Image 1 (cartoon, helix red, strand yellow):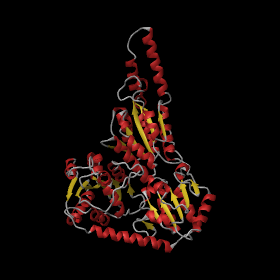
Image 2 (cartoon, helix red, strand yellow):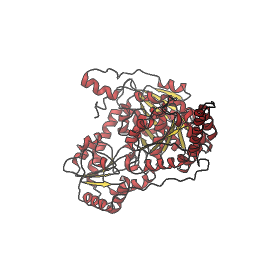
Image 3 (cartoon, one colour):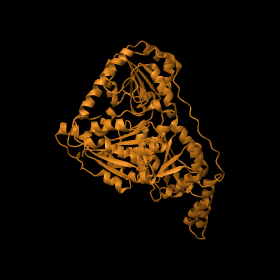
Image 4 (cartoon, helix red, strand yellow):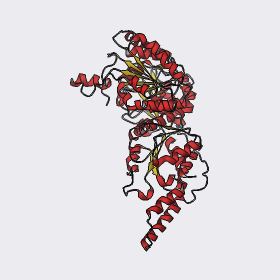
Amino acid sequence: MHGGDRIAEALVAEGVRFLFTLCGGHISPILTGAKARGLRVVDVRHEATAVFAADAVARLTGVPGVAAVTAGPGLTNTLTAVKNAQLAQSPVVLLGGAAPTMLQGRGALQDIAQLPLIAPHVKHARSVRRVRELAPAIHDAFRIARQGVPGPVFLECPLDVLYPEAAAREWFLAGAGKGGGLAARARRRYLERYVERMFASGGGRPVPRPSAVALPRPAPAAVRRAARMLGQSRHPVLLVGSQALALAADAPRIAAAVARLGIPVYLSGMGRGLLGREHPLQLRHQRRQALREADCVILAGVPSDFRLDYGGHVRTDARLIAANRSRREARMNRRPDLLVAGDAGEFLCSLSALLAGSAARPEWVAQLRSRDAEREHDIERRAVRGGERVNPLALHRAIERTAGENAVFVADGGDFVATASYVLHPRGPLSWLDPGVFGTLGVGAGFALGAKLCRPTSEVWLILGDGASGYGLVEFDTFVRHGVPVIAVVGNDGAWTQIAREQTKALGDDVATVLGPVRYDEVARGFGARGLRLESDAAIGAVLSEARAAAAAGTPVLVNAMLDRSDFREGSISM
């Protein structure tokens, strides 16, 4: 067994099914070892896509997703995706190749100081220098990635630790020279001992040792106090965020608990879809107004960051309960009246068990639902406005009607995706993927790849802005090669509209926000996928039906929707 075999066996023991990668000589043993042990090795066209795909797997399954990239530029290409995973609290394990241990710092190919570069963006970074340490390091990485506040972990695996011992000996001794002098003999002896230490006790088969992770349970006293505060309120509101779904397998239990509480709930991030498509407690519109009227607000895995105006959306005299795995995040910008340290999903289950429906406020829920209905009516009215090309609201409403009940929506873009968030209704728990707080463009191809592999029988709809689509169009080659039939819909209005709206209004200039009417459908066809062009509202139904049929037959599809400009959303600068 070489080092790549040992890594692969440890990954299998941890329940990993997919390894995302872009090949490189530094990591070849990891890839061959993974394939030999039944892992599906999915090679992509950019290292960031590999990490984004691993991130999606982590979010949808709760098992850390794994990506392997080569040294130097292979690693630097992942930084944005790794940072996105860190801020989204996704447990990703990144394996990075490195120059041979004895050649580091001596000008070897792609040799840079990788740990200082990656360390600020992960929970833990380590370089593995002995073969016997590889499997334990994998198990430690999985444990660290999931414990406490989840996040990414990086393991550097130098080339000589991964390849067979015979090859490493040959490389080292060839570099020692063949002279017969004392210095040459001493150098060869030193290198022989160095290789012996590197491979010492490394030839045996590692014992699988999957890592156990303790659930950070909230204190019962804190849950009881939260129950009292909620019971005394007349207008409570619950916000559920991604962190509440850190334990993906518990999503149905958490959904049932939220439903039993009986109070109005707004869902964000991975929380979207938690209650299904049309649950009466779920609200989608006018969240800011509801928070300003609420007398008790529960933030379940939601920080008071810019999305809540740094806590300003919650009125100052409201009782604020923050349940979070991170004390720092729970106190961010606004100190809560009650901080419940621990898993937010477990907190909701415990709270529901105490209250058992006694917190229900049907009149308050009806008031908020009435506002939601008004907003839905406004969207419906705007969706029927005809134009020269495609009305984006009409398109999203058609996708909402057309997409299957098992659909997973992946959102990657600015204006077009923000509009979609008002219209598309996730079908169930863990059926909506967006970048999260970092607002990263370019997540779409990797997220869609990971989602379709995890849920092969589900329709995966990739909702793309035309600006964002440029980051991942090349991955249609990956979709085709690996038989991953996603449905991508590109909202093509020839602009970075999210930025252009505010920039033009505030500064009177659209510089650097203008794109062309690109034939993204032809690009997809060039990679062997199906490319469809949509130019009018009248054709929406037929084109979407054709796209679904092609995907059902196993072909990836891209719909290039030529959009009319829309005034549905005002421009805004997020800060």
